[in-house]
Length: 120
Length: 116
Image (cartoon, rainbow over all chains, first blue to last red):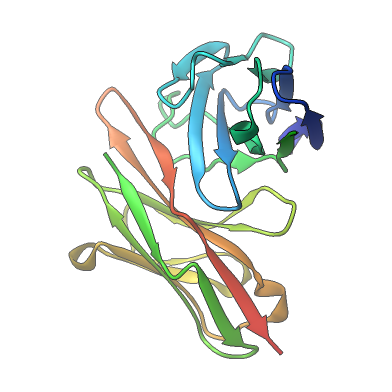
């Protein structure tokens, strides 16, 4: 499709429960990025993928967060044992490969509408 | 490391007035600069970007931005504000990186209010 599809739009979890979010990138886009937006401010980078391979995971809190992009499946972001501070909107973005087949930084990110996670 | 500073978390303008949203960047490599807009309950939408070449960049909805290397700035302007411009605007920076890439780093956003 021509849009980045994120599901669910809203997710409510009790503290300590697991949360899983999904992202279907635009067809033909080989890069996927996850960002966390807290309180309508900072977009915190979490992780990026080049196809099914982790490209950059420097932003991931590894003890509770994990992510995958498997062939022929939506990408996923999973939070084990959610905490109150995980309440945020999680945005997925995808990008096509650059002229040389790699992400150059100049590529435009196309964002999904986000998934709002509320941890009670 | 790269970073972006957006001056003013809230900007109010009258309908028809000039819109000026400020963005200053820090980058150790030639930057790629972007402005994105976020409407309520939506994701980010690209307004315009600068990579190389002409420093005055025109985007959608009548917006434009000028890359000024000497001032490390990339301010967003629009000559005449419309009510539909009310949204949150994010400046972002990335850049080329030998053998890899610079991930996109966003500013903290400026909420634009348009007063009738």
